[in-house]
Length: 169
Length: 149
Image (cartoon, each protein chain N blue to C red):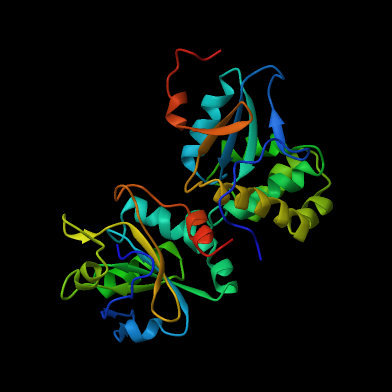
């Protein structure tokens, strides 16, 4: 059985997906590739001087292709192209069926056979599930959800914090 | 909400097939009742979608979850089918809100509070929670905390 009782947001782990300048403030994001609010937030975060740690929070009944997209991003990550796939998925949320995922993998020059095998593997599903469960345990209820780490403790922040454009880099 | 230690009241709700769901149906199983304000409303949508993702884990713990609202059965079924969730829905449509009132989970605005309760196989409430406002969505972690995870 999975552990789903309350627990703090985990700090960055070795296999987390993290990008941005090393000395920039860190935000931990729980998001879903089929969530339109997440796509908007991604653009806003990209315009700021931040380190972004991305975690999956796919909810099937809201977004039927969210799990498949999350697994595709993880499979691309196994070929060192997580963020490239992440950006391609958010760039066109209307095209998330399998042929669209293959087309993106092809565009990134991935080994397609390996990509397809990885995205359907138990290991990749478990990796996505780990992120989802950590979000549930931290009280995430919908996407996007954002946290900062202050003195080692995760603090929730409202994604609307990044609606303003005057502090973009 | 009826607090932990209290006995679940006598009540009658309608299942989606039109049959009655009463206090007798609580006996012999651990039950989570999810009182929610309105079918098709945004927060209720997010709530059922989220809980559906952890439903297997509740089942693995021998727990059955039901959604309860004052919507008519047809509306509840349409809502559940639109979302693609499997959480069984129970209707408190007529007399409107009678069961919600019995559980002290009726909002003065004429709809269920956003509230959760866990009832043991002996009909004793083991945990209950009412959200600070109907717009607040209780995380699924709270349910698992209450189940002793």
